Length: 145
Image 1 (cartoon, one colour):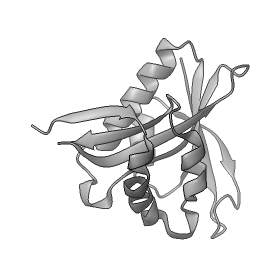
Image 2 (cartoon, rainbow, N blue to C red):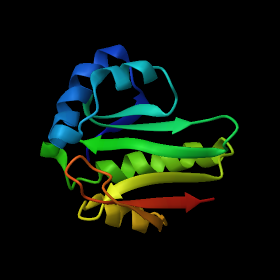
Image 3 (tube, helix red, strand yellow):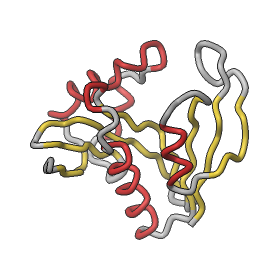
Image 4 (cartoon, one colour):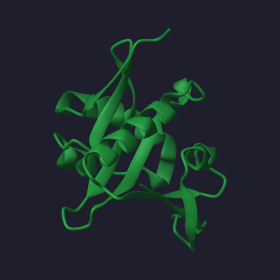
């Protein structure tokens, strides 16, 4: 059994986060986006045996009552080990306990994570045409509590 911990992202995590983010090529977010969110309770890393293997970043607005999952990613060498689901469960639990009413996200049609989101109860609410840099659409999904 692998020991895992989910905690708020720190400055010392940024290099590993950027290595994980690199898997998205031209869709990867810039370091400055992550740096601005450091210390926020909705920017967390997942450690497995003390090594950062994934992260999630969600955005909130106090007057919204909603959370938007901005990015969630796992080190490509660690895919299919359940780490994405661990982070999603953490985000859902924290969001619900803090009184948020929903979580929304966008995902590529062919992204295998889409099935994970559906398994957590996310529903498709829209298709966003030309969402990605390559012109592909995104599926907008939402989980309501």
